[in-house]
Length: 470
Image (cartoon, rainbow, N blue to C red):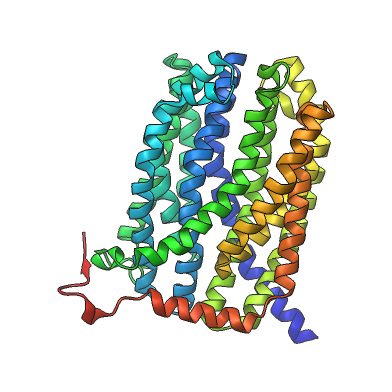
């Protein structure tokens, strides 16, 4: 018993060492959109609705996609690092950067023509026009964000987290200043808020890239750009595609709520309130996502090292930490429910509506914390395909239909939309819990060994030097 407790404490220390910094990294990165939205929200209700609509759409079609593509690195890089195949960590990352950059090209075309798309979706024309303007100025930030997410996974799976805290923290501070200058000082308004996000994403990416190039911590995993990254792309896509689907099916549901809110009575009010609520849950989601990232790293490292019992212990510690985080988030949101809306806008009607929404919002944050931890378990084990099916059933067979019924049939409006999300999250937790309890961890370790072996490229199959250092 004493040995068992000691192992739990040691695992908890390892995860806290990773989770603490990763929480700050996730919050800092997410704060860019929230800060820009706050600046716009103090200008005009129409501009707030337009920016909120645009952020929802660019998240759905762009940022969530590159997040999903890069999430495959949780499995590939984490298990390769655990197996001490250090050079493959850099190869996997380069492969992901190439694929992610190519994916952003058609997405940018969609962003440039957002207004007619939103009108087809029965959104208000004036809001759609402002949303298109915001989205067009967001285009430069997409490729930077894709590269940044790959770099973050590269460092995270090696347990290198403090440089990311420093880079993302400096970027967040700079973002407030850039927003103030562009939005208020230069009077660029909506355009300035979007441009500021792009500047901050590029700044963060460049800072971390310089660290990788010049730090001795990455000398074994980053040996220069290699032609080896051009090989085994289909294998990467076989995991990256379901990884993207898993992420998008979940996050698309939250953004779909904003689109549905535009079809409710008084769309400006409903869209603004739902956007504030979703940005709040998104901000708080980054805290358990940090715990989830630490868990996926520990699980993938242990599976790659061939230690199934240690991997299962990491799973249990991750879930316990997520439960505590969810409980704290619920308590905090209930305590600030009467004043939270004032951080986003001075419009009394919006602030009052946000207060009404807070009990459901707080409950969603609690359940979401637990299911986010399960998502980390799935990424660490390579269960992305299974996760995609779970998310499909939870959100689109349960959550969205019930949200529509509650909001439009029972006339619960925004509360009904969020209640549907809460029920979907609950179903998701139950499904992942059953899967985790029934898992054979010895088999998972063997699968990880096969994945690491198959992802390598034999030297004698390539001609010339493997690495081209830049």
